[in-house]
Amino acid sequence: MRKVLLLFIIAPLLMGASLHKYYLSVTDVVYDEQEKSIQMISRLFYDDLEAVLQERYDETIVVDATANQEKLDLYLNKYLQKKLIITVNGEKRQLQFLGKEYEDDYVVCYVEITDVELIKTFEIDNELLMDLFPDQKNMVHTTIGKNKKSFLLTAGNAKGLLKF
Image (tube, rainbow, N blue to C red; front, side, top):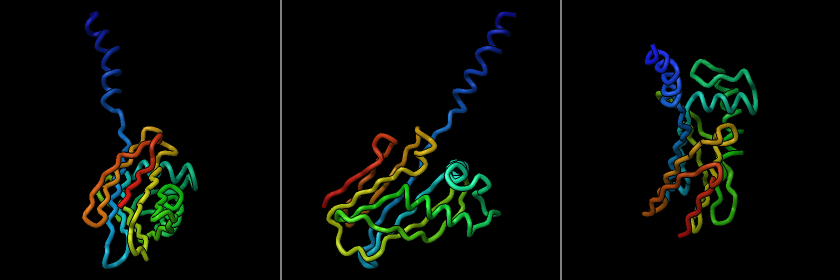
């Protein structure tokens, strides 16, 4: 009887530990020398993105292919502009939201910065989802020329800087 009672007490604790959610986004940054543009792809989990957009902008917003895509794109662009800040050669650059796709459990967002001649310094401030999820981690992979560098950005350290 004690073993059964102990099982009922410990089992929920163990199950809760295994259900712990991990908060991670991945952003790939590539500088295209021929196009003179920085092309970025960010992958964000549906449910996390939906929660943050509902919290910040509209509690009725739904993040999936059945939703009002025009409204979703408006809020998504607004959010990306505030939480994904790119500075090239000391100058903050404007992002151009190109669109999104739905894949598996995440939304793939496409962003570009045009008219980038030469990169001497590149800084990324990626606070995506950190305003709602303090444990959020944002992995950033960059390819600029022959240089490849990755950053793991957290709420306390959301900036990465490269100098060439």
